[in-house]
Length: 209
Image 1 (cartoon, rainbow, N blue to C red):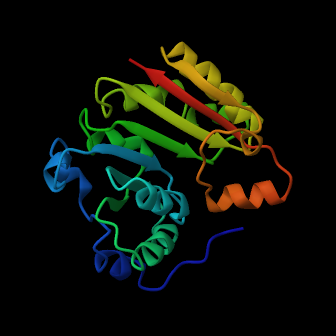
Image 2: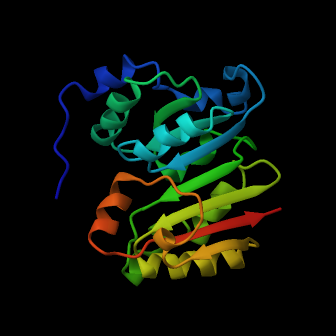
């Protein structure tokens, strides 16, 4: 189902204190917009923002950035954020392929929640855990790299585990049924929907030092 366009989406984004219009201008200088030294966590494909808003509420000592390519989706996240007072949260509209034009050794943790699985083999290079993307991420992380992924798609999950391992990551935590573990978890909108439909949620926390 195609997402309906939101009228005045660009105007809504530009009028929100949570939106950064030209994030590429901050490359190498993200720490300067923070009031103090904080970890910076990035979610690529933040969707309607439920996960990141709740994370920002729960962890005020961490600075969160939500990245979403579709303005009509990001507007929904902005609407939610505008109801909150969260100085540790910002959103940007950008393509994951160019994330290395936004950050230089500045990210502590990367979240990949329910990314497009691209299940067909011929589309595998479009998956956000393909080796091509992992090489891009190398330049945005600080010395230690941490990727946390959640998905309902076993094909994507299997390929992610393989690619992360080949790229030098240690698979620190793995779950094939996240809902029935004691791993702390803030749910996304998609996650709640999938759980209600009886789907298993796959989870991996991968570390590279």
